[in-house]
Amino acid sequence: MVQDFLTMCRTIYVPIHGEELVKRVFYPLTEDKLKNMVKIYRKCPAFSWQNIESYLKTNNYNSNTVTLRDGTKMALSTFYSNAIQHYVLKDY
Figure 1: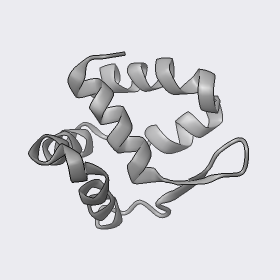
Figure 2 (figure 1 turned 90 degrees about the horizontal axis):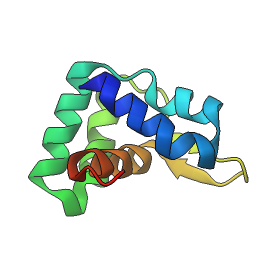
Figure 3 (figure 1 turned 180 degrees about the horizontal axis):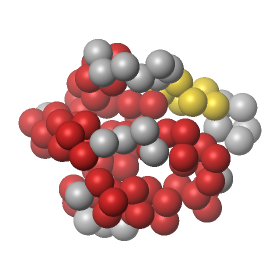
């Protein structure tokens, strides 16, 4: 599961955000953490970003913010919520 998810993330996000950011955001991910976040997403897609943010904060993610190429700051939970949405819907 996690390898398929990471391949999808590379396909979608490397052209937009670059290899370094994708590695920083997605490569600390484990199978268990992905399964937990997919459950969170499926339970309430509309608020998945908020619930995933809470999950990340309680599971040893040092920073919940990433800086994009243009300097914009984005919540890590937003990245994960968006990626999980693509993964669950298989629209990538």
